[in-house]
Image 1 (cartoon, rainbow over the protein chains, first blue to last red):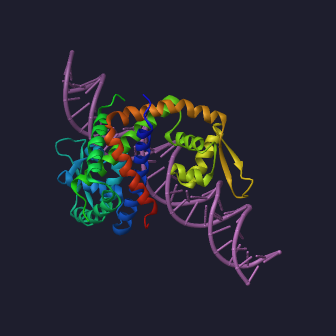
Image 2: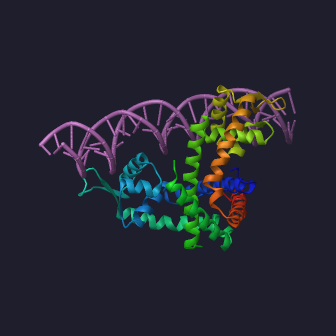
Image 3: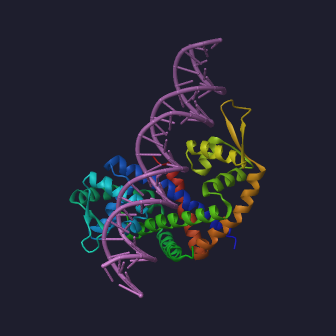
Length: 149
Length: 149
DNA sequence: GGAGTGTAGTTACAGATGAAACTACACTGG
DNA sequence: CCAGTGTAGTTTCATCTGTAACTACACTCC
């Protein structure tokens, strides 16, 4: 039941790598485009989904709480990057819709961000390591999704 | 400069795995021992260091801000898990010292936590994947440590 | 030996955060 | 059709968080 030292080390490195890179990427994005990583993620997910998502779908896709999504979207509406649409088919529902300004903001920021990912992350990894990370973490994420708790 | 799709996928999986597992591990620790992951980390680092650390060393080891360390230690002193000692050799300095109650709390919580790491993380990884994660992320962390920013 | 610069730690402040309460609408069975 | 139960989203609240100012002490160099 107790993990080996290698497992613990791997987990600690994952924690540290995550914190360092997330901070760095967030700073870069904020400095160059006035966009936090959170806003980027919202724009990215909306774009991936074809331009709009129900609030709870956005919440799941971005891994932000529903509370956060409400506030995030509110501010991004202020900034003109996103619009809100009442769902016609469900009186309770609301769509977050990618606005044109949001789409162009995403396009601009994507360059910086992808660059950062390559420079801070991809560049240091051998191909077999990338594959190992993908396959291993995919299994972990899948297992955590169904988990008993 | 633009990362491959595999690199981006690896990065996204790292983000998702981190968030899911950190949440889950924190909940388990809180539920079973009334200890947050943050407190655990403080106790763990103090123990690793032989029982005491200067505040700024604790900050570096745990990756919490100095502000957080001040507050974290204050609360843990309240709870009797940690003690504060003025540094004799430096009038500005303060040591956070692992109290006996902290040591036993750590010992109890460690079982739960290591178990969780194995169950949620280690168990799903093949040995070669663990090695790849360790070597790759170690290089990344080292590079980020010196980074220009 | 004391002015200037640097470091350790705390505090004040402003903003972010999630859990839980709350509102509004949807569905189901009688 | 309407009570009961469930889901979508927002708001409230209590707490946490980092940045920047602040206090206190240390070191250096004249």
